[in-house]
Image (cartoon, rainbow, N blue to C red; front, side):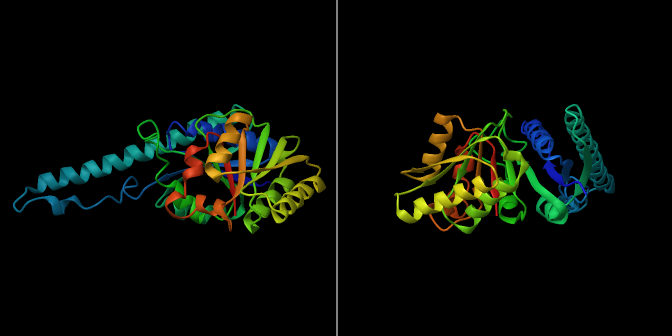
Length: 283
């Protein structure tokens, strides 16, 4: 049975990047793509009851007009959602990638939870429909998806560029080792230029962990360099990505060192916010 990847599209500036990255992933891994657009409960026609905002004595015609407006808005959202999916499917099929469309109603996180069971990974854009107006902020649903998705989560950058150089952030945690294992087993990373780095003060344990990670990749036929960087993870990794022109970052979704601070608490999205390349989070 051919595995699938789920690509979330919302019609934002990031939707094309999600499709381009989905095409790259599906092409290298022989996956099918399930395109998903989720209509919120308000968009899907379950809007709030506006009648409570009407003063006493309002005419029934006004209430009927408000109801009609809700219905029209729901129909427009449905039409727009279908158009978004059709455009995304056309983009993928132009590259020779098989794609299906899935228009869902309800909560985004619930929709992912219900459909990701047989998926290889989930793809989402770094930002959503307000991307052009809030460039310092991430998509409002991204953190919720990050915390709940059980499958690897691929966070697409604004624009696609061919992925040739891969950086793996490693801190010795269980999720970091699973990230390395995922790279070792995945067809996506064959023949890429790979480097494994950790951030902090060099210790014998840290060096051994890097060597173990390198050996795991070597056993799968993948060659990798290793390195230890001083400083804070988001700053050190961001600088390395920029200066060495890495195209993609893979890391565990949680850890037991300072890398963990990237995914919990007040600095949970700092790395993703600062990083200009796509990121794969592995639980």
